[in-house]
Image (cartoon, rainbow, N blue to C red):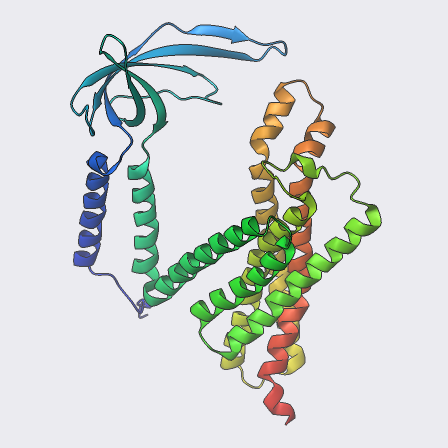
Length: 372
């Protein structure tokens, strides 16, 4: 039996060149201290002192430990000078961290009255890790998916720019039209992403329609429920660092959060129905609709669970902190996970609504010629 060969294969030369380019970029970020105005230093020696145990009123055990770091400055006026810097870290690493030899740090350097230099650590220099992970993700996307991967990457970059501009506009308008701004942004996100990934095709139009219908339907249901329940049990004040009206911010987050899931499901259903129609052109509209519904049922459960885990994972750290400080499960859940639970439920509603919408749109369009 003949083996199925992939349409595109990356040559060994291409893979080697990509690896060399990635290594070169990582090496460059290790030696780019001169590009920073903030002083950068490299740890050349670490001396850890004795651990000091700590126990709070709730019997949580931790320890703190001091480090004496010998740091060589890599840039600026004090380049190649050596400082001795202190650092204190705990086992929990909640507000601090331990440093290791050869790590690079951002420093705040001051000259004392006796002309000696004194430095404090402001942050860890992470550009090498960021560049490596970004390069790895982009390389795998382009090597495995070629042009489709490039278009997907382009859509992410353009959506990121649009999201940044929307936030700037919201700040400029002082949060007075946040739902309008991010509601329009959701339409633009869906249209731009599907156009770049699927092209100007009927499949793109059908997927866009199903995505918008599912997302709008979920948001309408949410607004009605919030109105009739008077938002009981929801603590919008627990949203982090929000300085404007809380409910519109929550709804805007929910719109963007559910949009991706609904778009994913609609794309899967409609692309499967288009492929099924190409393989069996004599299939009826009803059979197409029922097939789409079955496809939706098979992916609905895993997709809802993925969203649930994403929303819950975002609050996991604070949930543990509340429990470790003597709060009950009910109080900790209400104050931390209730909003994430609502957002996952809203996304679930959108996913459910998208199944018949995507199935009907696709079956109607594909069999429209049979009725003419």
